[in-house]
Image 1 (spheres, rainbow, N blue to C red):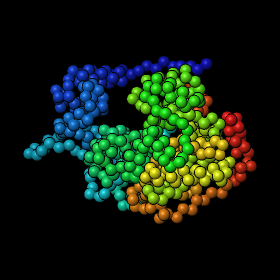
Image 2 (cartoon, rainbow, N blue to C red):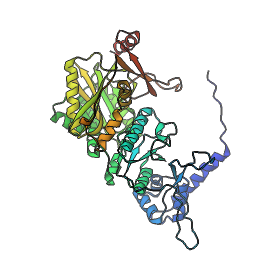
Image 3 (cartoon, rainbow, N blue to C red):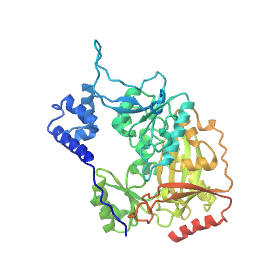
Image 4 (tube, one colour):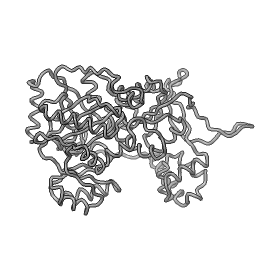
Length: 500
């Protein structure tokens, strides 16, 4: 039996919580009009987000932001001394804070902002934030190579990320690093301060991608694929219309916002049904249901956990093989960097599947369908940069599961397997610096590269170890083999037969 220790909480922490609680109660007595500068400044210095304060005052987040702006309550950026004060640090590594404006005799009040804005043309790369299941080091790889490629195109590079465990937050990668949460309030303040040419959202996974809507609404340029195309790919109804217009097969689907709508859709789609919320990390909340009781229970649970989120219901192609293609597109030309075949059948999250590069069991007829669909979708979405498309193959017919016009977690794997800097190329395409045809692609791979997920179930004792559409792996490794006759591959392939 496991021994559980009772940990005593230090009174210092409890007092900090009490202070925050008392401040929240005090702020809640006011309205947006009556809240004074001193109290708002104190709230920001104590770490309250604009969104939290807006909730206390029953107003919009933008109302709080505008109030701060009017009162001059703005972030200032301080330099992190990476040399431990032994000698002068010149590393451009910043964090934000709120401080009282200082007064110098005979002068205007000012805040000591240690980040100095240059007159160079700039590009901001949004990172993926803290490593989480469903999003991690793969996107950090993409961000680093995106920063380096932007620098090669003579941009001043600005990285925004808040994970000390990643290479993207090494102070010598970007010209400037803002060690800040990948959260709208922080991002917008930095954008207003630095005034970049645009922002790259394709490389930081779903965390960065979800900020595209706000960037577009505020008139901030998104470098690469536009928000309209990003949103079209996520909107199942619009995307399915695109597929239909291009004569591309897809599983029957429906969109529901209530449990009643989901139950009505079930009669049309036929079970089993894959239920998934939109704009989530690592397949969070995805589940395959086999009857109306399971469907209703899962939909009610999802709507409680993720309110105001549209739910996508797809007829699940039982026993299908899953494959995925990654490509670079400049809006006119498409180059497929790799097609991978999953060992496990369709229904296991792509992040949890073993997969081979190149494919090992798909014929030329199926491969040609994948290539044709990839070209059509990339061009129809007017993709500028990377795109990942996931496919289900049943009875030699290729169905599209979903398309993501961004870097996927498999792009670094393909880049390492083929020894090609695909993210570098894609970033230069996003920036309009190069066309796809400018690059001489020379992939090098003898034999096969197999992507193998890494699980940490020994660290998470109560997690159900059964794999499904919600991602559970915490990393991946790469296995190179010369031939499919090797024992390691037979062990993997046996899993597909087990699932089928």
